[in-house]
Length: 480
Image (tube, rainbow, N blue to C red):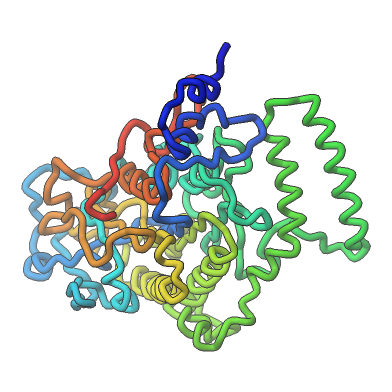
């Protein structure tokens, strides 16, 4: 039977190199686990940084100013319709405990706790009419991270890794920098490869730990560099022989590639993670001028700035060395006292230190990328699994709000200084309820900027051509 490649060549079609590659994408899928490395149109961006605020960051206390809440503060909340709360968050209207002020030429109102980002606001595109599907942390986190609200689907970084491949063979294509306290809801399943080749999954790095990458190097005294190298060579020969006997299994190929990558990373990763050569000015900008300081047990801005800032600086170093996708997490899974954005009890107590620390590192990252020219082809995405309610839970907290929340993007051909979509006067639901923005639209837009048509990057699994955006999504043309 004539292959599609032969047919297209003989037919003399004028698809062009990019369209031809897209048409032959499924043909390029192989058991080797290699990326398909396909572009559907010229890209505007090469890299992505995703900043994920675990627990549900409050849009109305950070980015989405609501003067009406200041006017109605303390009065019984009346949404004009029945409201399904996650817990018991339908108390009186509650104004933000933080002051807002205008920033940049656009005069965008930002909360005082994210004031460091005021210098960058004219480069940011805000989306204030995001909607989710659930108020449950695990499901909502899956939805934002993978495009589906149940386990078993690849993370966005895995799709990008699979679709575009590596820029630098000595470093992972997709790197994840978790919160220093531990994983958020779902843990590594948020960045797993699922049914994609196993090599597409994220590589977890804890840059603040003595051993940032587990099992990269042996620490036993009897292990020598030569012995380690010879042992890996024998292992590679055995694995290759096994692979020849079991073709079609991407897991072994991914394991082989992981050993090859690990050997390369033994030299490249320590250099990438070593920030000792950064200038004092850079370290201060990222909030790293207090390293080695001791911190109180309670959550505090200085500690959050140091740990989040370090991850942002490491992200810049990884990006400039060829890593394609970096995911940075703020907040771990639920526990008490709170160490994430799930501020049911007290917005002031939790959001002030978390937001202040996040804003320092994020602003430094945006400025650094812009200074080096990398912001032109690097997309920075800020997101969370859902927002918070404008009414009070208890006396100082806010319940979950999946009905509207905020994302923002910056760089990589995204228009700065604009807002797409608004929430209503309370920050409860989209102002235009018939035309909200969903995660599929965000994912479709990012893939578009990377040169990928989200409808055409697919992988057949269980008889279905799966894609990151499921059967939904459209590019937000107003933002690009």
